Length: 177
Image (cartoon, rainbow, N blue to C red; front, side):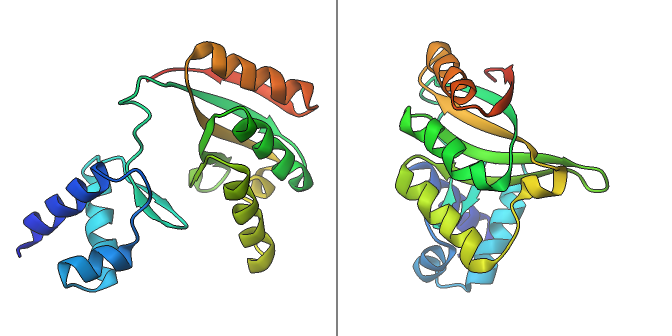
């Protein structure tokens, strides 16, 4: 199989899956190394394909195809409030697609999350604790942005209201690309 055919297969697989697909699974399916898949995905992203890397594999978000409202919220809180913040969002049925910080030296840094349930949040927090790493928000004194996918604008506004009611500092920056 040539390179272009392999990349088309990767795109097709990701477009038709609702859950993340690991690089190892794709590599086995295509009889190449995991590193080849990682490189292919990097090139596909550079070509403009919206492929998100999660802890469980690659996924192409479908929120735009379902006419969901995509909003951004800018928050500031202590690292210890992260679980509470994320629970508040997913408990209302919204998806936390990423976290973004604006770093003074490196510019905008985005981390893919794709959190939909408390279980996803717990797994994320465990990984942070077990790896003894810092959250991206710790680079910016707690200031960070989340992109969230909601059913509609009213749902987005309900999530924002819940975050404010939970005592989290919040700047609402709605949009729907």
